[in-house]
Amino acid sequence: ASNSKYWDDEYSSVDELLIKLGGDAKIYGACDPSLGMQGRNRDFTAIVTLLLHKPTGHLYVLDADISKRKPHETIETIIEYHRIRKFYTFAIETNQFQDFLANELKRISIQRGVNVPVQDIKHTSDKLGRIQSLEPLISTGTLRFSRRHRVLLDQLRQFPKAAHDDGPDALEMAVSTARKPILRVERL
Image (cartoon, rainbow, N blue to C red; front, side, top):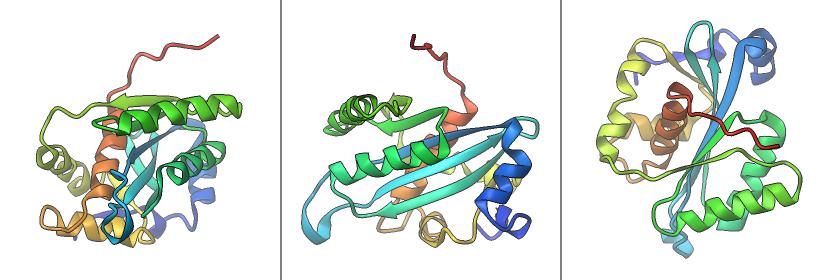
C-alpha cells in the first residue's frame, strides 16, 4: 500500500471532508462480524464506512473500526455509526451465524427508529480474489485512506499473510456495495 492516497493529507478531519464533498456524496458501510469465539481467540469485528463522491467516483474511508466485540456490541456500534453517518446502504456478511446478527441489527434499529438500511452479503467468491480486487482502486488513487486507520492499513499491507483480514474484508464489502448500486426498495 506504498502508493496509497491519503485524504487526510488534504482535509484535516472527516468533518472538513464532509463539508467539502457532502452534497455530492453517499455514505456506505460494511461489517465483517466476528464468528463469536470467546476469549483471546475471538476474531476482530471490522466496521468500515466509506464516502462515495459521485462526480469523481473517489471513495474515502471515513471509519475503520476494527476491534474485538461481542455481537450485541457490534449491533450497538453499527447503530451509533448510522446515527452519525446516515448510511445509504450498510452491507453485512451473512454466511453462517452472521445471518442472525444481520436480522438482529435490522430488528433493533427499526425498534429504535433509526432503521439501518441493511444489505445482506452472502459471499460465494473467494476472499483472496475479492480483497485483491481493491488493488487497482488503491493504485489509481480511487480508494483513499486516512493515515489514522493504522490497523486497516497494516492488515492491507500484510495481506494475504496477515493473522487477521477483517478490515480488508469489510473494506471490500463497502467498496463493492458503493460501486454496484442495488435497486433500493423504498419503505413506506
